[in-house]
Structure formats: C-alpha cells, structure tokens
Image (cartoon, rainbow, N blue to C red; front, side):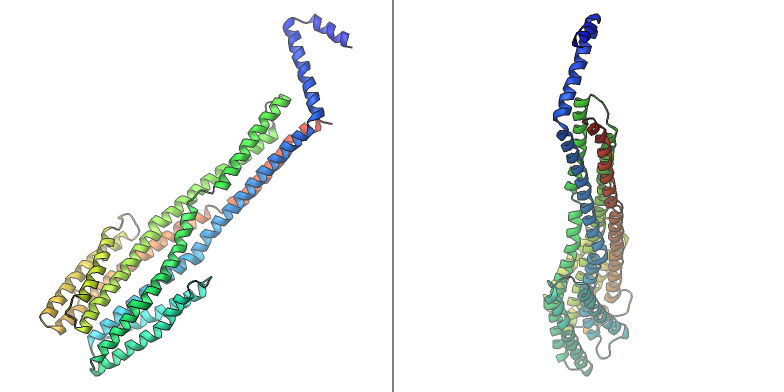
Length: 443
C-alpha cells in the first residue's frame, strides 16, 4: 500500500506532491495528538467552565452586596441620620425658645410656649426613633445621656418660668443653668450621634463609587481564556471557528459590558446623591444649628442683662460661620433658592440684633426685648423664623435629591446579579457544547 501511495505522489506535480505531504504530516500529527492528549482538552474545558462560573458567581455576590448597602442606606442609614439631625435641631430650638419665652416676662405668648413644647416633644420622639432603629450599642451612652438630660433640662426651665412669673430674679439663674446643661452636655451628645449616623451614609457612598474590581477582572480573564482556547483549538484542529466557544465568549463579553455600564451609572448616581444630597444637607443642617446657637446667645444676653461681650462673641462667631456657609453654597445645588432667602433673612436679623444692642446700650431693656422677641415683621423673631424655615426647606430638597439618586443607583443593579448567574451558566453550556465534538474525535 505504501508503494501505491508513492506511485500516486510520483504522478503529481511537485507543488501538489508537497501539499499532499504536508496534509499527511498534519494528519499524522493529529493522530499522535489524539492518542496522547485527550486530557489536555478536558483540562482546557474544565478551566474555562470554572472561570466562567466563578466570574458569574463573584459578580452576582459583589452586585448583591453593593445593592444591599444602598438599600440599607435608604431604609435605615439615611432615616437615622435625618432623625439625628432633627433631634439636634429640636434641642437647639427648645433652648432658644425657652430664652425667648423668659424675656417676655410673666405669662409668655402662647406661640412662644407652643414652640418650646413642640421642640421638646419632637426631641423626645426622635430619641425614641433613634433607640428603635439602632443596630448596635456604640451610641447607647449618647442616647442615655440625652434621655436623662431632657427631664432635668425641662425641670430647670419650668423652675425658671415659675420664678419669672413670680418676679423673682433667681429665675434667670435657673434658665442659665438649663441652657448650660443643653449647650455643654446634651447638644454635644446629639452632635456626636448625628455625626455617627452621617458617617454611615458617607462610608456607603465612598465604597460604592469604587469599582468592583473582582467583578470586572474575572469576566475579563474569562474572555481572555476563551480567546486563547479558540486559538489553541485552531492550532490543533486547523478550524477557524468553534461555535460553542464563540457564543461563550460573546456571553462573557455581554456580562462584562453590563457590569461596567451598570456600575458606572450606579456610581454616577451615588456621586450625585453625595454632591447634591448629603453634602448640601450637612451644610444646611449645620447652618440651622448655628442659627439656633446664635438665637440662644441673643436671648440669654437679654435674660442675664449682660453688658459684657461674652454672648456677643458667641453670637458673632455663629452668625459669621452661618454667613460663610450660605455664601459658599453652590448655586446649582438643591435648595439654592431657599439659601438665598435664608441669606436675606440673616441680614435682616443682623440689623435687628444691632438695634437690640443699641437699645441695651441706652439701658432700654424693654425696647431691646421688643426688638428681640416682638411680633413685628422687622423684629428678630420674624427673621429667625424665616431663616429657620428657609433652611428647613433646603434640607428637605437636598434630602429628596439624596434619596432619589440613591434609589436610582440601587435600581440600576436590580437585574445584574441574577443576570450574571444566567449568563455565566449559559457560557458554561456553550463551552461544553463547543468542546464535545472535539472530545468525540478521541474515540
């Protein structure tokens, strides 16, 4: 038979004979490879299967973790931070209102008294919310300190109120003691509680904008391995395309593209929720608290009839910080219009405060009290109320922006986790289907 093949080769042209020899050598090489290397193809298949399935599983876990963190932010962290902010603000408003009521002398106006009662009630309600929502004991001492301080503070205020009604000057001392308890103990605890709650939001946002590298690198490696496997099969079988591996490669490319695109959209939404939500809200919350601190210093100066500069220094420091925050507030941020209204109210309040100081310098305590607590549209009370309302509206706008963008960031990832599992499983099926014909050739 070898002689017959030799005669056939002799009948061919040199070029055709050379081609026939090369084909015979390739066939011989393939037979040798088929006899010696079935394990290699099985190993290649197992590696590809494991890489695709691992990439899908890691992507699904990473996406689930990130989406869960955003959902926790929406359901727990952000409401907790908002509640802590309301607690801090309510305590500040209560302290400022107590001083305003005291200045009125005798039976204070009903609106002022109602404002104080409402602020104390809101503080107690927010404290209950904080206790119910907590998932750990790290802030127990803060909640306990505020909870035990509220009745003591209210007792001192009521004692000051009773003495003030009776015309006893000792009432001013009780009110100063109550305010000192609030400013030195309760408000710092409330501030620390608020900072802890806000840090939970900041940490989630900071982690979310970081790329999920394992969910990106592993599908990329799987795509590279699939391309390399197709090149390997081409070198061994001299066939350009393997339909199964080609479909598996396309499937993993889809998974990789989906992960990157959805991740970028989600990260951008989270960035917007931070830049146009949590950061402006923090600035406006600080502004609102500074306003109440300044108001407390203003009223305590009248209560104590203090002619020194101690309360003025506190008032000036708070209002200067407040003005700097309002002037530096971004014009394209939520609540920018409210901030403009707050700045105008602050200017009118500063003018009223100046008139109050001028009346005090003349010894006109009644006139100074009328400027500080009177019902007139140009007096300090009206401006403080307008300032506080504008800042509260701005906080609401920025909070809505935070929640809207965070919800969008979470919903963008809704289908990615199950999609990653489906696509990686499909890629594994395509790999098996693509390699099975080659394995059958070993029989």
